[in-house]
Length: 259
Image (tube, rainbow, N blue to C red; front, side, top):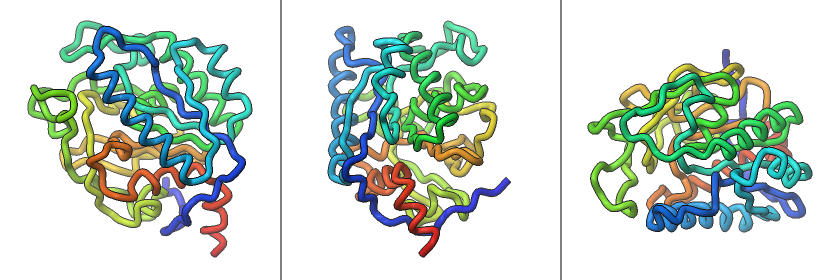
């Protein structure tokens, strides 16, 4: 199934609209270095969104499903950020796998509920890294639990600030993501040890790494885009985060289609 999107999307002008930036948790006392790096990434995404004119609210999903749904009820768009592994119970996986992180079941359940509501209400949604996996799992997909020590998707046995690995991603011609980034192949920064296995219902694969693993997903009818990499990392190519955040401005994209 093909998705028809503009080849070039205009820069957003989202003045007066609210973007909910949702992270898994605001507390990682057990791993302060990892937490500090996550905060750097979240802050980068928020700064770019504000530069595009969004009124940004920052939320932690581990406050629970009801709290997250209540606090995002009036949001015009949603951005789900990276973070911990999703608990295997949400996609029928087994615990005790190699590289397993701690699990935040309350955050998982809250973000899954948020994905369902966004699709039901057609609220623009962008997922980054864990955010892509949450979207996939919310729609019935599954995950490869560990890519192994030779994976090109992260740097191994290095300090957290050096964990991002650079590699190319090949994008589907005519897809939303290729139009936003104005290219068929992009260099990305990634740091994940899991990946999409079975693709969730309604999702279309629009980006793959050279090893075949899925790097971008779009919904066939709802305004949903997700990438497995980190465009908000300081080492990411200039303009990549801005381009992907433009997917959240449906008015701007509609104007690009009509142009």
